[in-house]
Length: 344
Image 1 (cartoon, rainbow, N blue to C red):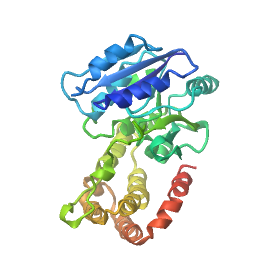
Image 2 (image 1 turned 180 degrees about the vertical axis):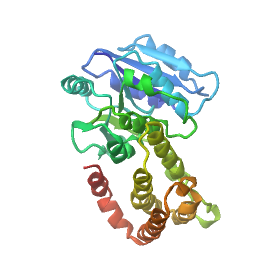
Image 3 (image 1 turned 45 degrees about the vertical axis):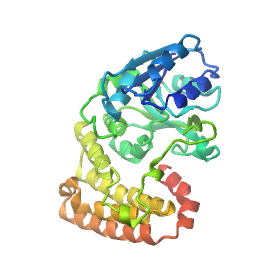
């Protein structure tokens, strides 16, 4: 079984080269590397051309003549795959453990070739912390409720796994520009009756260090002083829109699902980011998010019936108090346990 390791690339070529060198340690031999470059301004083309000459695995490379944006580039790297499965990583991620791809292939064969999945990750920048989004190595199911339970596992592209034929069936540019194409596709595929699986073993090394340094992150851009205050929404309304429309396109959208999406966002995602910003000493950013995510500002709020609108407004108020008043040390101590609970 051929596995295509698919990488959406944009600049940061030295991270990608480090990743490719690490992938060479895999014991599994039937691999290919598919790289879609979103019109990088660095020397990606030249470096990959030279690197490919002596690389252990075949490299399939494509460069867009103009910048197409994250979603199109993400889909393109999977479209390029000729393997039976596509294993996606970011261009600053790599494969963790030399037998990871062999382990994955063994699981896929023993479980009748499921359609879509995700795995856990090890984060290099935090001294090899386990990022746990999968609580078990197993088949999880296939319907709208399963899609809703696990949609947040598609937030990070690293370690998303697609049966190529299934991806091709549902691949669409409908939500290019949302920056959440992988979440839309994941929910659409699962809600349409295709099988979701999870891999508890960490197969991805996330956020590579280069010369002991980590690339810039969102923490370098958030407002930590009141002079930088602005109203923000954190992209959360876009997530909600993608989820609702994925269920709608699968023919599975109900009032209960719409309410579940709002409830999940306002009980988990929203207070998490309030606390995360506070943890990073960016209280003005927390306040900006509080203002930006007032429920009536979200277009899809009108899809809720009146009783559910009231419940969402109440939840927003409670979560705001929790997010702004909970001691940060408690958040740091229990956030991984809370995340694991909601995935179990």
